[in-house]
Length: 510
Ligand SMILES: [Zn+2]
Image 1 (cartoon, protein in one colour):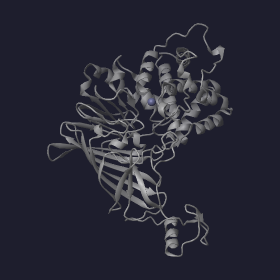
Image 2 (cartoon, helix red, strand yellow):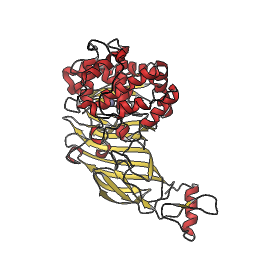
Image 3 (tube, protein in one colour):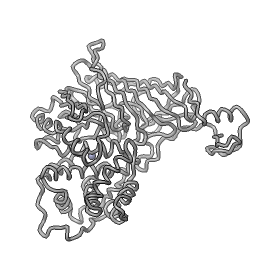
Image 4 (cartoon, protein in one colour):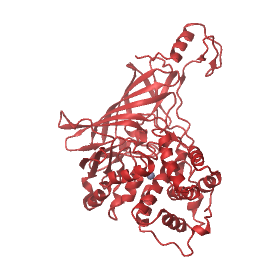
């Protein structure tokens, strides 16, 4: 056991060793020591972090610094066995705490002592340590487990994708439950070591860099080792397991690049390469607009033909479904997923209701990329997008700023979300707009943000009251009016970028 000798734990020791002081449970009582001390008995950590949309996602009472996820996987059976070691700090006195997890748990140890466990709710593992945990105490939580993730269902659903040759642990917001126990909410970011033993000949791609080449293990197996040293939200950790061609390189700026292409893509393979191989170029261009690239590596994974139907901004290395390559190369989805490295990954939602901060911005990055590519200005894409949804279309009934838990990935969050940013740009002018974006990614780097904080920042930089604009575009049902001066008399012509942007959003939203 390591006990953090903080003021809080020292004071608690004094209190519990002496006479119990009067006080309401959970409240601090004044003391002669000049600092409040907690007199309440240790309580269980909360089963959630208070997310408005997903109240039981994440858990209270501790904060994770690092996950060491050590797995063994067999594509033939989809059997996943593993040990995850969680390094955390207690943020309150704890009689018990929860992890979000679904597979079968063999054992849990907390600081070396065997803990008892039970399950609760849809995805809660309740851990009762052998000894009470005190606030500020450092915790080493070791969970041993096994299961078949594709057959482990919640409400008939698994976030795990089993494929012919392996699996994809890629989903949002629910992904971790099927492969590592966690505090599953973007409010609690951590670093990751992820290693996976697979039959030799199978590839494993994950976040960050490979600190060591794959290691041969007994039984004709190989262990793949990945590490990410930047704070990572749990849903942005991933694994792609299967038959992949891996292409490694270094960017002109010195960053390691790891790209991987499923060998199942067949005729779609060249389009995937012609898109993902431009990642470093696109990230460099985005860095000029959004601020310094926040992470230690880059890349992309072209998933298998029988894998996911979407793409996800998994940190340092987005994963793309095969659908994006059906019309040939698609750099718009690459611009979208890599824009998320700033908007979503480095600056994450404080609550899932803030999803516009992710999808509106990544979608607007596509409009900016269209302008950069000479395939239609952002204004032209705005005009065409606006005109493509008639005023009575139900599209306009979804509020991008508060779409509801069931519509977090509604198309309105993407298209109306991007329209909102374009209206902000028109209102504040280009100088202020392109100052707001890097200020946002700088001020909230590796942290979280809310729409209200973004509006405040935009108002601070522009000197304008933007309440009407945000209320109208993000929080009011119905198609907002736009100034007729900004509208063309004739119906807008279709920008060259439109087909791919629309197709990308069709695949990304649902
Ligand atoms: Zn997105």
